[in-house]
Amino acid sequence: MNATPTFPASSPAPPNGQRDDVVLRVEHLKVYYATPQGDVHAVDDVSFEVYRGEILGLVGESGCGKTTTAMAILRLVQPPGRIVGGHIWLDGIDLVRLSERELRRLRWDKISLIPQGAMNSLNPVLRVGEQIRDVIEDHEGRQPRKALKERILHLLHLVGLPSRVYNLYPHELSGGMKQRVCIAMAIALNPILIIADEPTSALDVVVQRVVAETLLRVKEELGISIILIGHDMGLMAQLADRVAVMYAGHLVEIAPVRPLFKTPLHPYTQLLIESIPSIKERKPLKLTEGLTHDLRNPPPGCIFQFRCPHVTEGCRTRRPMLQDVHPGHRVACFLYHEAVASGGTSPQR
Ligand SMILES: Nc1ncnc2c1ncn2[C@@H]1O[C@H](COP(=O)(O)OP(=O)(O)OP(=O)(O)O)[C@@H](O)[C@H]1O
Ligand SMILES: [Mg+2]
Image (cartoon, rainbow, N blue to C red; front, side, top):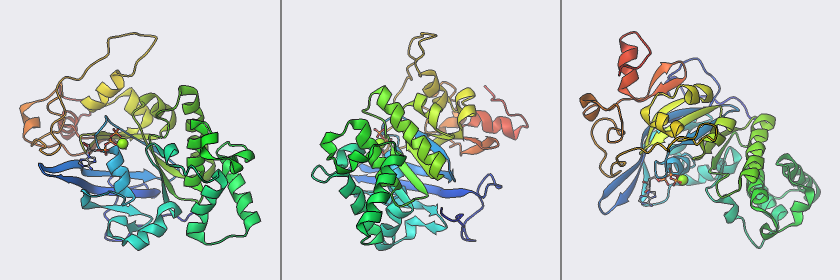
């Protein structure tokens, strides 16, 4: 397995101090898309860490910047998008500063992506075995055939696919099988981190479960860290160790999965969790009033102010930073910051 990542002396200590198993640290990341009407602030000052062997869920409504964050981590943001600020530390290296050549080695090797709609990106004219072989040989050079085939069969086995899949074309596979082939490709080079962008959307619930269990197995058996992007809060509750909530390009809350679901702090997270349907207790779906602001023109103050049921005058002029309210539970909301500053931890409403 890979060695413990080290951070250069110039990198500040993690905000919660004591953890030394940080695999990826994103610091003040900003990604903007240029448009004729001005820059879209798709990711605006986002900071978080991913720890070794954990699944970090990244959730938030459509357009909040999840995929842009993922693409920035891989330095794959396409024009008119660009990284305008921040650092992305992976294994002691700041990815933001690497050349394209250096990056090419790192992708797949240390960090791999299961892109949104991945199963449709498999090459239709190559058999599964050949596609996985190409990933390995592109990075490691030509390999002895027999050993390489054994390695690919082992990868297929790890993601729960039978050996015959080696000789099949993508069109001969179900959606869930294709998605598991994508996971096999993502783990082929023993990365330390996988980013899976909505790996179960467009699959029925039974197949979703199989793919989810495959990701869990990858985490548990190989110790690989995973950033799992998705909308499905039920799936997050089952899979994630910690969950980060994004709203309009900002990270508004990050916490271990249990406290996040049991005592969500940010008003947006509360709305997300209240909107999970339940058959036991049927209730009208809670709709959030107001619209997300134009991302080209973020308001001064809190970015959730137009939809927040607890908004105050102060929220319209000052922006709350992401701060620890309990150890490991960070939120960007004055309701809690002021309570913490005055010596308590319960919100002041
Ligand atoms: N090429 C582009 N030009 C201008 N704006 C863009 C471009 N690509 C993305 N955006 C904007 O950036 C913001 C973030 O988009 P992103 O795809 O990261 O969201 P997301 O959270 O992944 O959404 P989804 O859940 O729908 O996949 C959106 O407001 C989107 O409109
Ligand atoms: Mg997306």
